[in-house]
Image 1 (cartoon, rainbow, N blue to C red):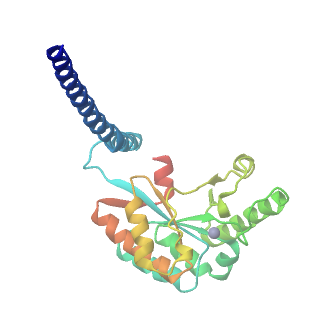
Image 2 (tube, rainbow, N blue to C red):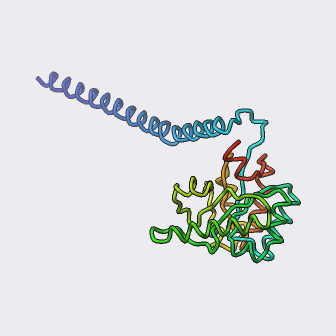
Image 3 (cartoon, rainbow, N blue to C red):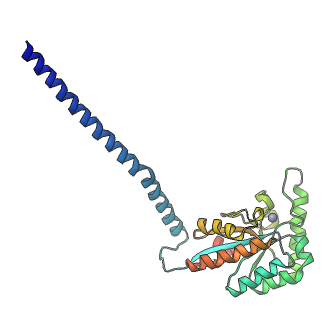
Length: 248
Ligand SMILES: [Zn+2]
């Protein structure tokens, strides 16, 4: 009986060790799988969506230019906008300016310069009004008035609008024949005076066909925008107006 008991004990111990061994292997196996399926899979998804983005842009050949657009709201500012225009000219960059009617009226010479240097000019309402349920008519009037102010300076019709705070009514598109332009990167440049920090946020996020929202109403934004141009041009990006991003 003692021998039998000893044999059973040995059998139990061996089986116990075997089960433990299998269990541990499984644990290690699961852990590896989680690693592979976790961040690895996400990385693959990111790569796929990047490929789709490139395919969408019709830019499969990596030697073709990568387009990106800088847009500036709220101007023109009497000195910072000119500073920005100088920097853009030096770098051969075309941007899009969404100006308020109020500021355009104060600085028609700057609007004229934007046009002469190949930038696109859009409408940002007359007084930077936000569209709400109870002010549709006023908002509409501001769009019409701002178009008039810009057209009197440039002689050209205004087709693009950046609605302040991004609130928009699609019916305006047919009523006024205007096209809204929102954005894909917003570095919140208006709440920081650190140009390097603003530029860093943009460069980190930038991808082909992005529309970057900035303001030519602050010195730090202007500095940041020119830093963004230098860094992204070095990475092979070409700066274009929003028209080229939206319709090419
Ligand atoms: Zn604005």
